[in-house]
Length: 175
Image (cartoon, rainbow, N blue to C red; front, side, top):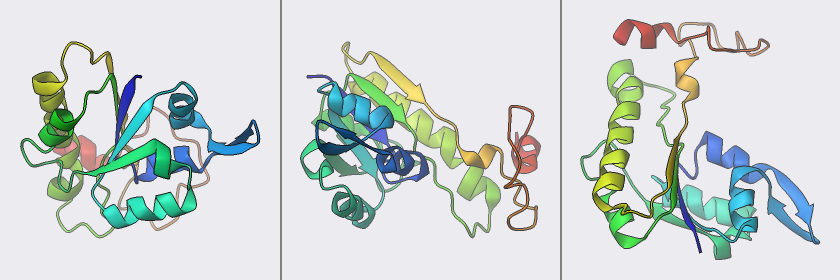
C-alpha cells in the first residue's frame, strides 16, 4: 500500500481539503487530494504542530480516526525536524503544505518569511536522508503569505481575483 505524508495537516490548505465532503457508496468521505489517496488505498500520515487541532479534526471527521495518522512536528524550522517522521515510516509521496502564518507577527521576516524555506529545506533533507529509493514524488505548495499585503486595511482585496502578478510587498523587499 502506498503511503503519503501530508505536512501541515491541520493548516489552511489541508483543512479545506478535508472539509470538502462527497457521498460515495453511502459513506461521507472527503473529496480532493486526500480523498483520492483514501479511495486509492493509500495510507495517509499528516504532520501537525498542535495535537489538540488534530483531535478536533478527528471529532469533525470520524472517518479519519481509522485512515489518517497525525504525527507531531512542533517546529519545522529546527534542523532534523522531520527526521523522526521519515525514520518511523516509509513514504511513497510527500505533499508539503505546512507554513506558519502567525496573525500577530512582530518580526515579519523571522516569523513569516524565513520559516517557509527553512521548513522546506528540513523536509527535503529528511526525505533525502531517510526517504529511500521508493519515495516517488514530493509536491510543494505555496502559501497565501506570498500574496497578502500586511499593510492593506483589514478585509481589503478580498473581492478580487489574485494571480501570478500579485506579490506580498514584504516578500519582494526581503528577497
